[in-house]
Amino acid sequence: MSGSPSTPAAAPRGRLTAARLSVATAGLPYPVAVVDVDAFDANASALVALAGGLPIRVATKSLRCRPLIERALAREGFAGLMCYSAREAIWWARSGERDVLLAYPSVDVEALAEIAADAEVRSSVAVMVDSVEHVDLIARDVPGHAGLRLAVDVDASLRVGPAHMGVRRSPTRTPAEVEAVIRRAQGHGLAVVGLMFYDAQIAGLPDTGPAVRRMKKVSARELLARRAEVVAAARALADLEIVNGGGTGSLHVTGRDTSLTELAAGSGLYAPTLFDGYDALDLTPAAFFGTAVVRRPADGVVTAYCGGYVASGPPGWSRVPEPLEEQGLRLERREGTGEVQTPLRGPGADRLALGDRVWFRHAKAGELAERFTEFVLVAGAAGDEVVGRAATYRGEGQCFG
View 1 (cartoon, rainbow, N blue to C red):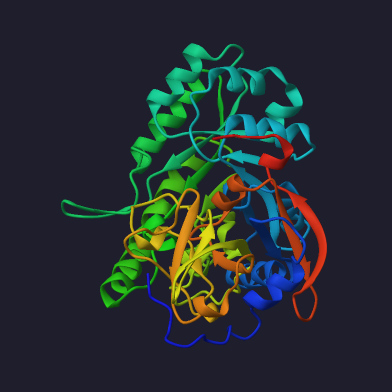
View 2 (tube, helix red, strand yellow):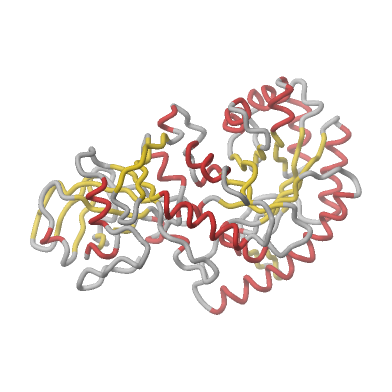
């Protein structure tokens, strides 16, 4: 994580400042989470522009807030949900959503049986598998499994000799392996209706230098050819409704692939700090959280309440929240962000009194919603007008893991 400059910097054009966020939330209890809906909408337009005309399926894990997910779905260029939990998929289907892709394999056999037993839910949800083993588990353990609609998660990582670039997800990679999964599913009375390819080594990796950029280009070429072969092999066996690919960080690449029927994105709508380092993305930070100064332990130091909202992924400074740059504050390297308090250093500290607000951006997107029951929605030319509240999953009493 970079430190704050010696003097507070102006916020980039079009972005909310800490001062405006404090004005908008004056009188509200801390900590408070805020979403700038103008920035959210601008990011939605930017993502659609990168998608090359393909519809974008909304990744719910990256938002975890039903009103904001519905706001994205209402925009032209977005269609369908990509859920991360079987019970979440049921919740959305029973709320009326008719195009739900459960994007991660589930072994929650009770939830899978519930999907199978409800004709409306079953017709709305495609359940992900990534292997013959998972197909067999469904056939063995899920009562009434016949007729379940499946999609196959195909490994999209780059392999060069012994090197593996990407995430460890599906063991199914080649056309022959995909064919085997489809045949096994059909043998059990299961219908394969989709494929998914998530290119984490492109979509999830900032452009940190020439080596990364070269790797991404090589991976995009390799995946373009292999994905076409896999899709052709699958279509010879199954009537595919869904061929999904990409993420926020790779829309500009996957949007040019004619073998895909749709893309996926979600994080880019909030534009957390991990997306600051992508060459192809021009997004506006839309999600923030603010807390209050509760101590002034020394000159140049203040302590803020809570703040320890560390993101998932490889541990390190890229996974912790960052104070908005113009505040002239930086994290204490020996302490980081805390469960109950977060110390901050810098020239901005001496301008803060007890009770003043300090504002942060989260490293990732939807994980912030697990810490709050609602987002305060702001808009307006100055970004300091509260225009509504949006309950998070937690605020609706939902916790899907």
